[in-house]
Image 1 (tube, rainbow, N blue to C red):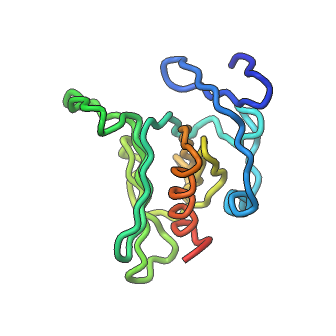
Image 2 (cartoon, rainbow, N blue to C red):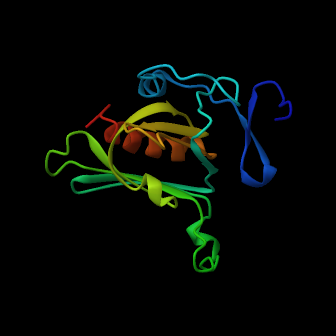
Length: 173
């Protein structure tokens, strides 16, 4: 990792590409939502909790929605509106989908789907970190327990995503 300008954090993604993002100032609601349930060791990015075996990628597209008794947030490495063609068979672009349903008791479990089949399933999740440039979650199980996604959201986009993330993680109804 190379040095970033003051007030910026630097994120290294697959292929060695660096993305610099302004370090976000968090308001009280965001600080409360991102309050860690426990402490993880710091690795890589100053001020970011991380583990060596986490699934990590950079998302070019982030969406959030609430419909009926469901909420979901989706992070995609490729923007589906770019007119990009489907990837070749066997090659899937990185993505993370987190859904939570409220129609019936779910025991606090979320449905997680990713490009890596090892992460797919219904799991209890713990929000570790969340800002306009970064999401980190812990999956309560024995292996493949961390997912980290970097992205860049403007203020309006972040407010929409923050509202849905806070519902999914039980911070608001």
